Image: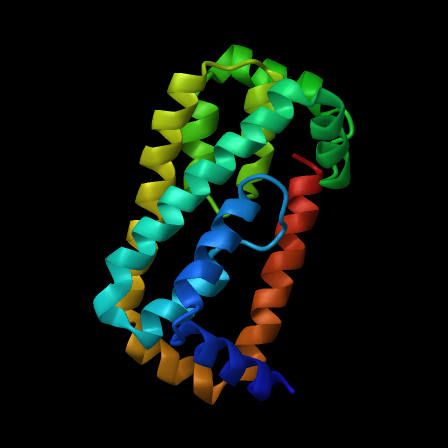
Length: 191
C-alpha cells in the first residue's frame, strides 16, 4: 500500500496537472488546509529537477496569496479565524498572538514563515491582530520564498541520491516522518 501511494505521488508530480495541484495546496495551506506544500514540491522537483525554481515560484506566489486570504479571515471574519485557531489547538490564541505581535511584530512572520510550522497560524493571527498588511505581505514574500527556494535547491542537487535511499527504506522513513509530524503537532499544541 505504501509503495503504491509513493508511486502515485511521484506519478502525479510528473504529470501536467502537478503545477495546478501545487498552487492549490500552497494557497490552501496558508489559510486553512493542514497539509504543507512540501509534500508536493519535493516529488515534483525530484521528477523534474530542471523546473525546481518554477515550482518554488508557484509555491511562493500561491502561499502568499493564501496568506492574504488567511489575513482576510482574521481581519474581517474574526469568529471564523478564532474557530480555525481553536481547531489548530489554540483556543486562547487571539490574546497570545496579539501579545506576540505587540512584543515581536515583524519577527513573528519572519521566523514562522521560514519554518514548517503551520503558516496559517501566522496569517490568521496577523489579521486578528490588525498587523500592518503591507509589512505582512513583504515579510511573507521574503520568508516563504526563502523557504521554498531553499527546499527546491536542496532537492534539485541532493534529491536523486536521497530519492534512491528513500526508495530502499520507504517504510522506515515513512515511520520517521509520522513520528516527526506527530511530535510537531504535540509541540505546536504546547506553544
